[in-house]
Amino acid sequence: MRSPCCVNRGNNNKGAWSKEEDQKLIDYIRAHGRVCWRSLPEAAGLLRCGKSCRLRWINYLRPDVKRGRFEEDEEDLIIKLHALLGNRWSLIAGRLPGRTDNEVKNYWNSHLRKKLASMGIDPDNHRVIHNGRLHRSHSSGNATRSSIDDATNGLQNNSKNGFRDADDLNLDLTISLPSSQRTGSDHLQNTASPTLLLFP
DNA sequence: AACTAGCTCAACCGCATTCCT
DNA sequence: TAGGAATGCGGTTGAGCTAGT
Image 1 (tube, chains in turn yellow, red, brown):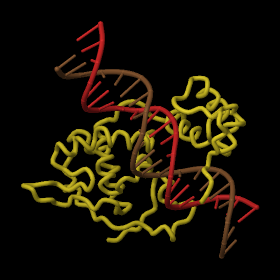
Image 2 (cartoon, rainbow, N blue to C red; image 1 turned 120 degrees about the horizontal axis):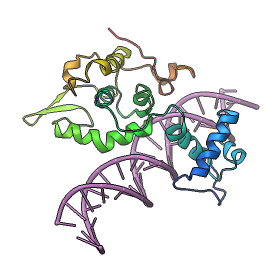
Image 3 (spheres, rainbow, N blue to C red; image 1 turned 90 degrees about the vertical axis):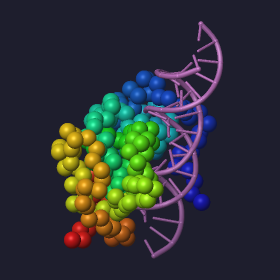
Image 4 (cartoon, rainbow, N blue to C red; image 1 turned 60 degrees about the vertical axis):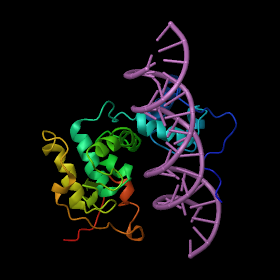
């Protein structure tokens, strides 16, 4: 098997980041840009592994990261995108400017799962439960580009109405490109606007 | 005031994927 | 083309906070 990406040197810090560590990371990235995460800690004078630095930067230190509670329209969008994409948090976060995958994932697990459950919707598969019967509202994990755009556009339209039952989206859900047909530049998980096949 | 249970979210871990030689 | 290195992703953990008793 592969060796772990971060060799534990024995003196690596773990746990919460201090202000000094944050500042070192910010200063280094401002001065040098995002270079090699693996070599960054040593170059920046941090006793952290590269993965830890990357996570800290992406989730909390990036200048464009949006902090604070989720708006109602953001909640609505997350629910719709989760119904379309499943637990592909980075893809979902890519549709929410300034939000990170970790933040969306945490918010889903701590708030939205309960919210859906209280509405009689299974948060895992987005099926609506009526009189003990399950009704599929979305095909979790399968999505068209237009479906995702529909959900994203709803950000402007639905905030007044709150969450609507997913059934009324009337979406046509179909599988995306297989991974073997993807290239590095259009890799589904790395783009805010994923490339997906449309099946009319 | 002290204790406990539940909740939130920052951070870690292991695996998958992509990149590079 | 193969294999190792680097990066990214999603699941999980646990420390700290808050509400309830």
